[in-house]
Image 1 (cartoon, helix red, strand yellow):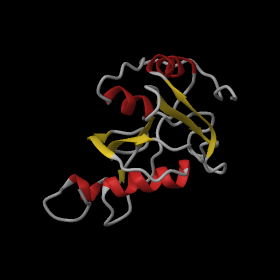
Image 2 (cartoon, one colour):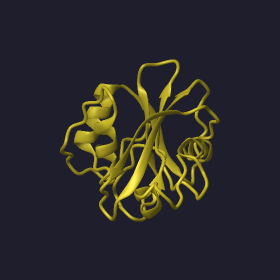
Image 3 (cartoon, rainbow, N blue to C red):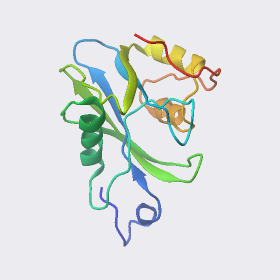
Image 4 (cartoon, rainbow, N blue to C red):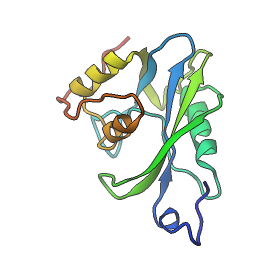
Length: 161
């Protein structure tokens, strides 16, 4: 869906973001990555690759673009769900996607400080140990089949691999 004026209502009033949740084609675990220090949320970690959807750009285009820019992979994305995230700063639309990645990740070191493939159990543990950006847990909780804890204890960075 593209943003624009007219009957779309909220789409014209709220910014749009398009996160992707990559997973490996060789393992059941999903990719989890941390970005370089977040300027808006220092010491907190994102759980997806996501940026703003540009004017006239489809959610799917933005999701694929972000994976290419941040993780260095060009793969098809699959729409999973969309919701109006009430957000810590202001409301915005999130169109969440999934991508199956068969090739090695080539993260941009300016964007990605650490990345790794983790299983569902490790992902749950990460949400209990580390502090994520405010809306990350909300996205992950809404993912089908996901059980993400609601509380996290502070820890500034993930372990180095």
